[in-house]
Amino acid sequence: METTEISVDIDDSILVERAQAGDYGAFNELVSRHDRKIYRLAKRIVESAEDAEDVLQDTFLKAFEHLDNFQGNSKFYTWLVRIAVNESLMKLRKRKTSRTVSLDEPAGNGEDPVVREIAVWDGDPEQRYSQEELRALLDGAIQELKPSFRTVFLLRDVEELSTEETASALNLSIPAVKSRLLRARLDLRERLTRLFKKKGDDLFAYL
Amino acid sequence: MLTCKDFLREISDYLDDTCDPTLRNDLQSHIKECPNCWVVFDTTKKTVNVYKGTEPQAVPETVQKRILAAIEKRQEAKKQAATGPPK
Ligand SMILES: [Zn+2]
Image 1 (cartoon, chains in turn cyan, red):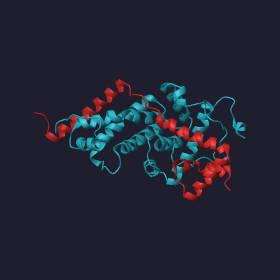
Image 2: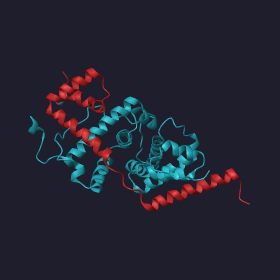
Image 3: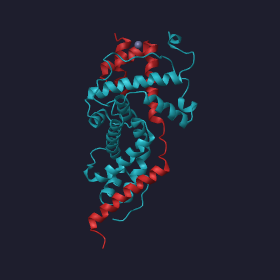
């Protein structure tokens, strides 16, 4: 099959069908559509640009190898995210042999989540910081979370997988996904509020 | 009456709008009367949105090239497997 013109408004599912039929240009288009987001996801899970580059490459190679197994009952991007998460976690485990990384570890110590910083934000961070500065702040904050928490947050809130898709991708129960998401969100809220709050503006201001 | 602790426990589902209507109403009344929980809810929502809204950085060009080359290699191998070895 000949490589055909690809316009930006062609749906992923059409490109996947073409790629499955042997149109390699269509596969390369899928790569360039999604490589940024997959790279960001991998970087945030493995905490290293170099490892993230390997993950990125392995993810697309795996996707290419197993393209015929992709059924189309989920979105292609969701399928890609699942591969990337697996590759990232494998990388993380390999690197941190001393400190085991397990997604099965109990979520926290069973206590209620902690909320200390109660203050409104000083305007909109997207206006206050350049995209580059903001990215660095967000990456820094998420790196403070345990892998099992930040991975759930990334899948649910950044990649926009459903609770069910996240549970299945990470081999977790639905309640486990929900409780980790709650903690991750509140934990990140705490960290970002420390960065973005109006100085001198605290809870007593509202009482 | 819901306590602030109750509210915090449900904040995630409230944000995703996945709690049942009765609970949602209770949470709504709590947040109307409790400025602290309102602030926590507002900043949690903003936290999620700022992560969602920030554009990813481009993949470095050298990495992009390396990946496309690796894929091309596989594609060539697949093509040859389908058509038989070159003469
Ligand atoms: Zn309250």
